[in-house]
Every structure is written in structure tokens, then in C-alpha cells.
Amino acid sequence: MGSVEERRLLHEDLRLLLETSLPAKRKKVLLGVGDPKIGAAIQEELGFPCQTGGVVAELLRGIRLHFHSLIKGLTAQAASKAQLGLGHSYSRAKVKFNVNRVDNMIIQSISLLDQLDKDINTFSMRVREWYGYHFPELIKIVSDNYTYCRLAKLIGNRKELSEESLEGLEEIVMDSAKAQAILDASRSSMGMDISPIDLINIESFSSRVISLSEYRKGLQEYLRSKMNQVAPSLSALIGEVVGARLISHAGSLTNLAKYPASTVQILGAEKALFRALKTRGNTPKYGLIFHSTFIGRAAAKNKGRISRYLANKCTIASRIDCFSEVPTAVFGDKLREQVEERLAFYETGEVPRKNLEVMKEAVEEASEAAAEIKRKLQKKERKKLKQEKKRLQALAAAAETQNNNSSPLLEPPEQENQAKAKRKKRKPQELEAEPANNSLGDEDAPLPKKKKKPPAVVVVEEPPAPQGKKAKKR
Image (cartoon, rainbow, N blue to C red; front, side, top):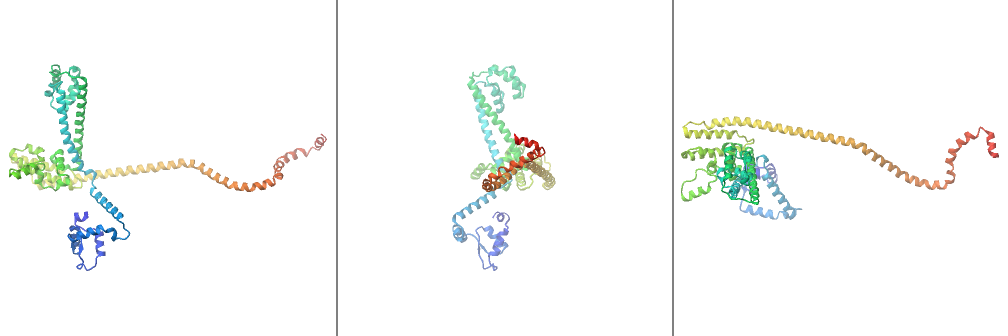
């Protein structure tokens, strides 16, 4: 299904099925196909006349409903399981993507970044209002929210502020004059006194705002690295944040690549566009791309022209990022140079370079950059393979040493088993021999004594005859 829809080609299995199942006379056959694209491909390549829609849809619905009764050995439960498995496999194939080129993470991170900006601004204003009761002069001296929260956490009670804490103030403010102004203002402040419990709550809330601000910085770095991986040309042309907002508003990088330049130009200004169409007023000249630096640098009369030119280049960059195998930032840098030249042309009249020349240079540089990236990837793969081989060899060596060490330990149990088997064999022989030994017990009992005693008696008693007589007399 997917190959037919994307490439308009028949699968080999489907071709073989149709050629073997349908008769040779193709004109007499009318083939009903549910998908018109597949029907057009079959009619074009195989020559079978195909019909789609109307009766064919009803027939397919009936076949799908009574499929288990039309095929022998198939139950309704098995058919439902097969349909469920097919649906899961189809969805799994649709969801498959490259982990390194996921634009969903960009969409979520830019949304979270915007939400964090709103929350941090709201919380900082709450800290200013809360701590302003105690030290109102600090608001005029320090304008940055993050710096104000750090100072509120450091100062605490303004009456305890002294010359010793001047170094800490300079580290936060990065200005000795401001630090001295804060110290002087604390001595002559008009603020009210504050209890220790209130100070503890203000400090805890300030630390929470500081942690959110630091997390926002880390999230922005993550977004920058992710944009350089997924859409390097777009981020080099218009910036990481604006490019991420364009991708988020379009839904994905593929959708953004499918948009024409006129849509990209007013992306984010849909309300103003429809209001202008409804009231027959002037349509907006720019949407999200207004946040780029180019439109701000252009003169008022050239803002519409530069926004149109910038939207055109953004569309080219997004298509290059979406459909290139090895995305690089070369095209983005070249497109940025073109926009700079166009800005200079609007201001000074200097004629910019032609697009053909710039693209030729970009293609050459991009091919070299892609070759370098491929070499690096191949080196990484080789290193991984070597490490895997070393690991396997180490495991094999460890297994061999274990076997060698455990073999002598395994020998005694084997010998014990053999000895036990021999004992079991001997037991029935001994039981058979016991009755015979019992019947001849009287005769057999003295035999071992005779074997042991006669040699000693014979050797000692034979030579001296008189000793035997004396013994008899005694």
C-alpha cells in the first residue's frame, strides 16, 4: 500500500498473484479494486481493466465482514486477531523514524520554552512586588528579573547588609557602582520591616524562580543543538528559535517543506489575514519571520520585500533539511549571505550575485562536508565494531578461564559418583554371598587365623626339639 501510494509501482507479490490467479484473456476480466491508485497502477502495468468505488466498496465490505466463513479453518476470533496484528504492524511502520532527526522534540521544547518565559515573568513580578514592601529602592536599581531574584535571596533583611557583603553584590551585579548604590539604598530605605518567616518564604520563592531561569537556559541550549541536528540550514538562515517556531506552527518539518513561500511568509498571522480578507483591507506582510533580524534591519518601505525574499529562502532551506540524506549548514550559510546581499542592494543599490553561482558553490561545499561527515560516521562504526570484538574476546577468555578453574573442582564429584555406582553394584553381590558365608561360617572363621599364625609357629618351633619336650612336660 505504501509503496504504491508513494512510488506508483506494483509490489512483486501482488503482480505474481494477479498473473497466476487471473485468466490470460484480460479483456474479459473486470477487476474490482478498493484503492483507485492501486487500480490505476494495475491497469497501467498489467493491462487488466479495473473498477473502483460504488459496488466494489460494498463487495469488499461484505467480504471483510464474512471473511472467516469464506475460508476453511478460519474462525471469527482468529480473523479479528489477524486484523488487529495487521493494524499494529501498519501503524508501527508508519511511526518508524530516525532518532537523530525527530522534530517532535523541537516542537515540545519550543512550546515549553514559551511557557517558561511566561511563568518566569509572572513569578519574577510576584517576587518584585513581595520583596518591594521591604526594599522598594532595589526595583529601580536592578531591572533584570533573574538578577533581582538572586539579589533578593542574597540580601534578605536589608538592615543586615554591610560592607562585607559588597563582594557578593558585585559578583551578582557585575558592576561595583551598582553594588555600592544597592548598599547606600539599603541604609536609607523607606521600606517596612519584615519578619523572619516572611523572609524565609520570599527566599524560597526566589530560589524557585532562579532554578526555573537556569533550567530555561539549559533548555535553550538543548533546542539549539537539536535544531543543528534536524534543520541545520534553517537554523543557520533564520535562527534556532524562529526556525523552531516555524516547525512547531506547521506541525512538522515535512509539512513546513511542503508549504509554498507565500504561506511561510504569513505563517503565524492567520487571524490578521482572514480579518483583512473579510474586511477587504491590507493583508499582513509577515508572520513569525518578523522575529528574525533581517526584517528589523530593513527600512520601513523594504520590510515587505525582504520578508517575501526571506520566506522564499526559508522554504528552500526547509526542503533541503527535510529531504537530504546528510543535512549540513552549508546551504543555510549561503542563503543567509544572499539575504544579506539583498539587504545591501535595497540600501545601497549594489547588485547581488546570481542564485545559480551561489548554489553551485553551495553544492560543492556541501558534497565535501557530507563526505567528511560520512567518514566520521564510518570511523565511529569501526571503533564500535572493534570495541564489540574486544568485549566478545574478553568474555570468551573469561569463560575459558572459568571452565579451566572449575574443571578440577568438578572431578571429585565425578569420582564420588563413580564410587557410589560401584558400591551400589557391590551391594547385591555381597547380599548374595552372605547366606553362603553363614553356612560355612565355622570352617571359614579359623582360616584367616591359620594363615597368620602358622608362619610364626613353624619358624620358631621346628629347630629346637628339647624346647618342645620341656613345653610338653610343663
